[in-house]
Amino acid sequence: MTGLQNFTKGLWKDNPVLRMLLGLCPTLAVTTSAIDALGMGAATTFVLLGSNVVISTIRRVVPAQARIPIFIVVIASFVTIVDLLLQAYFPILARSLGVFIPLIVVNCIILGRAEAFASKNGPASSLVDGLGMGVGFMLALLVIGAVREVLGSGSIFGMPLFPDDAPRALVFVLPPGAFVTLGCILWLMNDLDLRRSRRV
Amino acid sequence: MVLTVAAFALISAGVLGFVYARTRPLIEQAKREEKGRAFAYILPEFDNKPLDTWRCAEPPGAPPGDACRRSLYTATRRGEVVGHALETFSTACFGPRVDLLVAATPDLAVSGVYILGHQETPGLGAKIVDGNKDWKNPGQARGKPFILQFAGKRPGEFDFRVRNDGGQVEVITASTITSRCVAEAIEEALRIIRDRAAMPGAGAPGASSAEQGGAP
Image 1: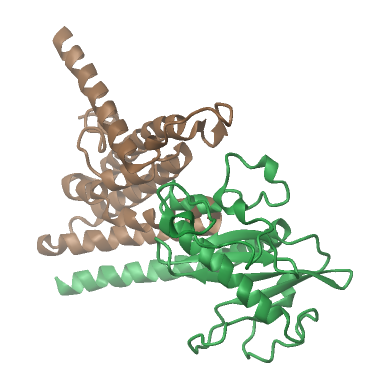
Image 2: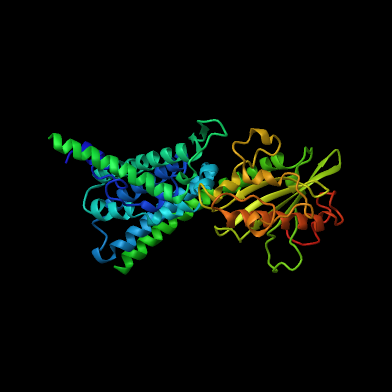
């Protein structure tokens, strides 16, 4: 696998949200607006990069039986760091993401990549893997967040698109809207892949 | 094996302690600055520094403790008291805790409410922060922010219960618990301001801070 493939697999083929259906808790919960989705994606990418690099660096000194607790310590440390940094430098974003920042620690994408990739590969390719997965996660959240914000709040990145009295589909801001949006995007992706494989 | 785990835990603790120590003053500073900015949004026009008028304002019957959990700030203009702001909190919301500033004129009409911190659900209960800065020109607010409905409301004239409970407060859709706890916190804050602001030293910053002990 080349470096480029290592990166792009996270974007489409092995997209953590849209292909592996991992990390659905933040995917469904913080995609009510595009900006929250982007902030969540960026924070998760930072944690994923950090934990992938550190775990692949220490993979030879970690005893196999104790690897999960050690991985969790590494991941939790990065999550706490990102939480403190956000509060110090981006207090507004930190406020709007609230409890979902600390909850990154239980995002299965991160432990999943640590187990499946970083603990078996070198730091450089783990970095690329983490970047691809992180960006794939961020893009998936951004698409869902943008759709939900446009349909549910009538705005994009907080900028109003329609007049104030235009009707909006409130259901898209509520939890069911997250499932409906995710389902439709999965349908579109599968359909695209199916067409492509038929052509070949 | 145990040693390895312990070693990693120690390293991690060291790194976190370092980051915490470095970000702590920044986070405190950001909070203080935000409070200072918030006064301009929610209090009637003033020419003093409300942050310097800190007084402890625990309601009677509050559990004893070292820390002061509620603070009262007073805004003056040419020496006249124009309003009070109470820094308070509620633990009855959907998340563990909401911190807020409730400001009122001396005759106890709400002049503004500013949410300082919360962990409500993004997109739902988190809407309590919408309109926090729009008290002076509510026309600019987008949509109809929940919080702005309290503008000018007085205890006794306005029923601070939510519609669902027979009151007059319009709730945030799908966030009744958050709406209820914020409305209750505002009403409680007005009560505390009423009881506290009338006490000696209300208009003289610092004059009565010895009464409760503690320092800002």
